[in-house]
Image 1: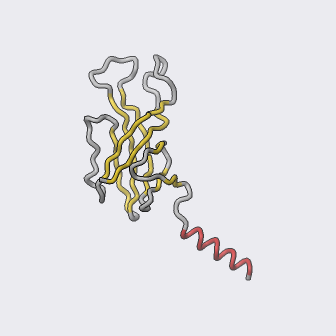
Image 2: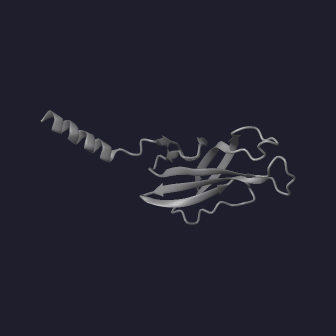
Image 3: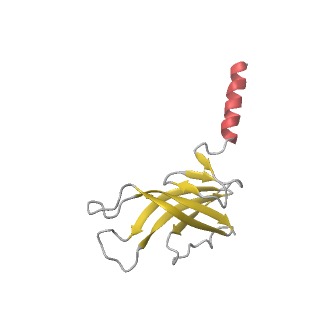
Length: 135
């Protein structure tokens, strides 16, 4: 009987628990975002960072535009997934029209895998600070 109670309790807890890999964050506060991580907001919405792309001008090139960082993410809102792309360049506006609420995303403090040089003119981005604000 004791074993049945323990098994029933474990099944109940596992079915009710949220994503254990989720990192708690708050709207309006900066957090360090890394590809592969899932971030949970206080209203139950989840944000997964799918990829962070270095689309900056390579350091061994002369470019007309400095380029940007692109953050590909998936919002999970009430069981529905929404793809979203944040552009670090202020001249490119993030498209939030398909999301069921109005947000803005800003980024700062990009961390590269190594310093840009001739041997690696476009190093990968390890992380960035994101701030998600409800409008």
